Image: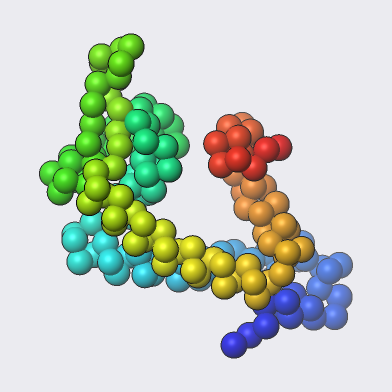
Length: 170
């Protein structure tokens, strides 16, 4: 197993991190990390003919029960039509439930059903284990830097809203 603390400990790397080869390396690490971070979940979802869009919807609905469809659209940044297909699949499989809003009956509020909660917990458990292992291997300073880098990837106009939503402040 590679010691994550040594990934960037090559001589001079601290001074050269904005060179083209270092930027490319960062992009590739992000691609491979993202691929493997989602691999367990992708495999589980594939057995149910569900994909990453379903996973993202389950995650955010599970994180905030009674999430409005419009809020989910804003979080996922996908079209109404795409979200409609995802929600239709999740409803048909009994993984989510939708109810009208209390004040505005036109509003649709989403929540996970017990089956949806079980699937969400199963997917989250695998991801939590993978990220906990990586965080342990990297150490607290690297984790803080990683979070700063990820926050820096979020569009500037979206960053305050996203950081507030996830409880990361500014």
